[in-house]
Image (cartoon, rainbow, N blue to C red):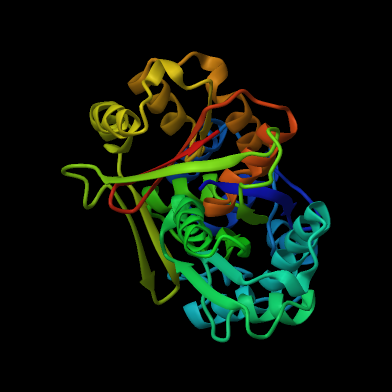
Length: 368
């Protein structure tokens, strides 16, 4: 039995941060010397991003960009050389206050798109790696969407950019075990909550790439679904060899701290194809059978590494690059933005989705 996608919804913060403004934001928060200032334009120009959503809000962003403090936000830099930005507690309070409305908006769209009554959902899966509180935003979804108080809840946490693929695997298992299940999966990521202050090249590259967004899907058994409905047929997972420190995501005193090693593209080029070919063979498929690719845009170099590893034509990542350009890297929510666009444009199937996260771990999903 396959997992059918019955409704889609996406949401980004109100207002758009242009990449030129993102660069100015970095100049206010990160460099300590003139030499460091000169590095930033190169890094920001290579991201492939033109615009992105940032949950901080326009008044706070204007305060930072104009070097004033009318909002009193803890995200306003204090101008000292030892400024590390808000504490982790302050950042989590920020996530708890501003994040749930975004997830609610995306989920409302998914429910409306599915025409399934909120009271009919048996399972709720929430995905995030950028904010934690309890009760979590699953509670906000239940209360604001009028889901049943007895809905079964599952939280997928701290899995990084491929977290949604982990959530879909769990949803697939639920539907296989209970074919009449209706599942709402909601991914919420506020990456800007963990904006790094001060000089650390790996973390500044993360600043340059990541953004905020939410995406939700309504899922159920494929039994009565029409042919045009996208269906998840299989999932795969692999921790790449010799990669433990290539990508990390740790809790620090001033936010969650991400590192992205230079070896990541090389590890993908070396190890992705052999594992993917083996996994596809279990589904009686070869690489040449795959008609489209939903590639998580960890950054332009990641997309290029996947294309090189699998000998894919440039158009294979066209939708991924467009989503990156318009919205930035919204961590786990990004793949649902990509899959939604592919479904809307009738991208050919079978389709394989790929995402990477701390480990370095690769996750794959096969859609038919």
